[in-house]
Length: 252
Image 1 (cartoon, rainbow, N blue to C red):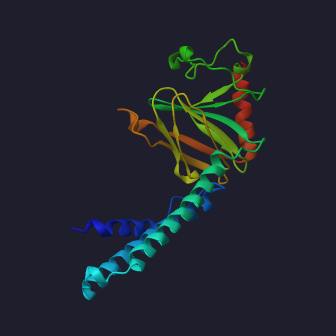
Image 2 (cartoon, rainbow, N blue to C red):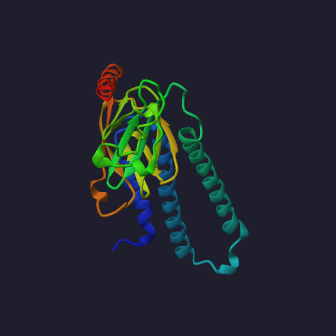
């Protein structure tokens, strides 16, 4: 059996050498660099810890001979290292969530419900219609509860597939109708919980056309295993044609 003390180092080495999922977003390289930096540091610390244990066993020094430098300097160095990694990670997090999206970003609402994802695009007026919980009725064709009395909602487009244009920033408004769901697209380096009663903004720019899996990373109930959808990234001209066809269908 492998001792527990070396498992973190083995795990870090495996991830650092096997590679990450394909990166299809503009912000992905910065996230990957930070993740791999963390993994290599974990691997180095695991190796250092075992080296110290080995030296200690060989030297068999008495506890009275230990110096404060040996005890406290490594702790101070670790504290500084972790502070550096924390600040670096917070900046990456803030760039996608707390820094406002480009005014020209495509607006899309992402809604999780047991056990499906819905995606809403504003119509020609570029304004989302008002939604009301008491109007939610997927069987009647209104899974998000869009108020028919609100003119802004009559041209909204609701789909079960997220379709986005390549090389254009997208501002996702993520929320949930029932329980906490985890919206995740590994190839886009996206992961954000959908929380009932909250609207959380995440913006990013897809760059590689293709079809990618959308997963739920929270155990949201017995049907969690089937809560998935597709993200389809299209060239700008193909996306414009897709959006025009959807708008035409809504206006009928």
